[in-house]
Length: 257
Image 1 (cartoon, helix red, strand yellow):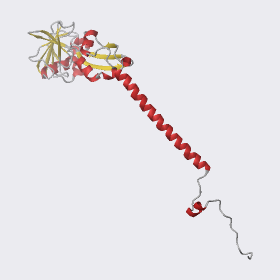
Image 2 (cartoon, rainbow, N blue to C red; image 1 turned 90 degrees about the vertical axis):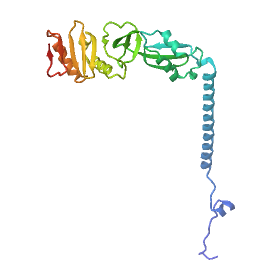
Image 3 (tube, rainbow, N blue to C red; image 1 turned 135 degrees about the vertical axis):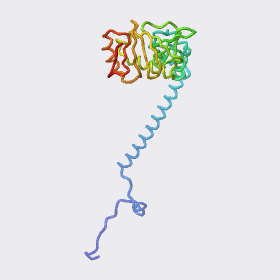
Image 4 (cartoon, helix red, strand yellow; image 1 turned 180 degrees about the vertical axis):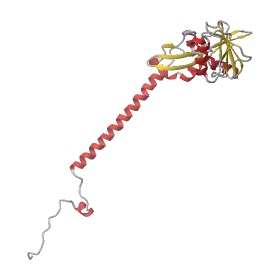
């Protein structure tokens, strides 16, 4: 052949590779694929193991006494006793913690007349914690059946003698939705503490005409439950003056009679 002819070196491929136009995967690529496959298998086994452990732990907590109620802590009671709360809770000792319906248990405690709010929580491994907020008497009303205590929302929650410092509410139909009761309770809540401790009786003639009587017999005409802070400041100053009737219904024009 003449010098113009050109030699070509054969590529290191098999006939099949040459025919398909593809080269073999390199050794590094094959190693990476095998590693990925191994990791994927390990991850799957790890996930399966975690699921199995969760199932086992749930079964232990649900069906065995390992995580069951052995004690009940009661917090926030003063008028009520802990035994009263535990009885209302009605969760037998030995009940698995996961089987306790916390919402239903709290509702049973909240059904006690003196309870304004209650929550029940699990405390592992073996306790229930009951947190109670008791109702606080703000006024009392006289009824044929006895003296009834009302809280700041007007709820009648107990029939017993009032604690010292709790004033009498005089209203035809005291109740949470009664406008007269609501107006009286709003006024009591807004009074300065130095005045509130002197109130022995509060009488709402209408929702905008609230009056109350002090320990020494003096009367205060408060008017509507509005401009509360201003009225409280004016009244505290007026009470330093002699008189029998103190009218702060118009706090910019108060009178003493």
